[in-house]
Length: 114
Image (cartoon, rainbow, N blue to C red; front, side, top):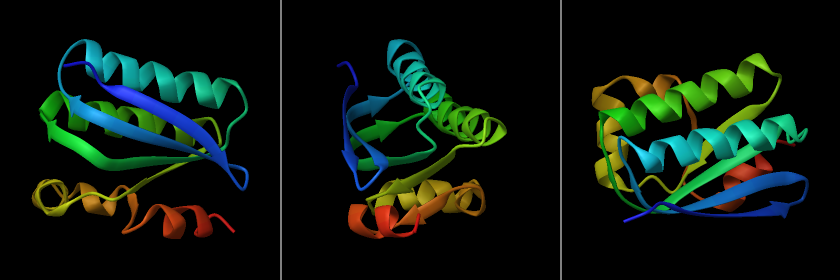
C-alpha cells in the first residue's frame, strides 16, 4: 500500500497528513522527496501529521530522522503530531523522542511555530 501524502498551508505552516505505512522502499523514498521538495520551495515550517500511519519500520524511522536532519541543515523545522501510542512508544524506546519536536494535536504543532 502506497503512502498517501496530502499537504496544505495552515497559517504559514506546511502541514502534511500522512496516510498508510512508512516502510523500506517506495514509501520512505516518497516521504524523503516530499520533505526535500518542500524545503527547496522555501517552506521552513513543516508539520507531519502521523494520525493515519498504520505501520513504520526501521527504514521508515531512518527516513524521518534523515528528513528532520536535512530540513534542519537547510534552516527549516520539521515537527510531528498525532503519533498514537504504539508509535510514541517506538520513539521512546529508540530515544528518538529527544530528536523530534512532538505535539499531541495538529493545532498545537502549528501554534508551536509562533
